[in-house]
Image (cartoon, rainbow, N blue to C red; front, side, top):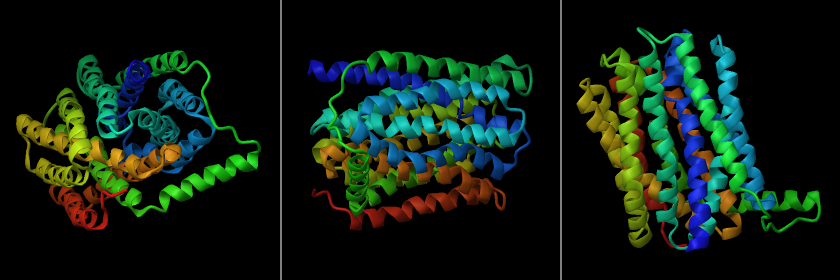
Length: 399
């Protein structure tokens, strides 16, 4: 147990600072920064979603590459991006440069995300649901702290509406956390890593391609990953527009907007390990289906509410639904795939995950440009509800 626990704990510590850095740069700072730069709803959604588009292109190749050249080298590349990119926001004075930086910043999670999950799957054995959930819950504490901390920096340092200096302060804090993740990562990832070496570049490429083909040809991997992707579509929409809705429609302040996001993350953190353990013992499908329904209903209720405490209750149920889905879907994908392809499996999962995350704010922005929050959110809720029977009828838990 000691050999598993030590690297697992170290990996969680690195992940905490990495996620804290990324959360500080994202919600509620990013959408409010885009609003400050003069962006409209579509442009705000695009700014929030563009970094996730990076993951669509790079997560699967990153995961597959880690199967071939090793996890440590691949992880350090991602941690380097976490450390450097937050400081580039200090150069931003217009919306278009913000978009470029957001796209490059997305390499951080695109490279680090699937590889770190593959490492956990490597050591988890039959407890993939529980250990992947613990890992996600512990590292996501960074997200929990990042959102309200970002809101506090904007609201606490400014006497009125946030200025450029307050936004720059938030990104400096993000950069410090990113540097911490890199320094700790270099210490943790020292030493030799056993990797099955390929003799030629051609052999590396063949192993790379064959791993991808084997994973993506399994419909269960694609459909299960799509459930997480659809759920994450609503997560992306909330990241982009819950702060805007809270401040401009519900009349809350920036700190309260950050707290709404934070409470959702708290519930996810507390419930994911329990749900993961349940999924290990009793199956993944029921939890995924129930979680999708919870997310759809709570997401659809948000635009009907303006009171801070009622919005917080909706956020609680959304976070609970998210924990049901995310505790089981990644573990289900890992169950299906062979151990030598864990990196590719997590990369495929992450790619579909990011398609959902990127499309959420973009779709919400397009809908909000033509209709109000109620109908926009209800359309997205309906998509989640319609996916449940498709998943239930199409995927079996037999491997």
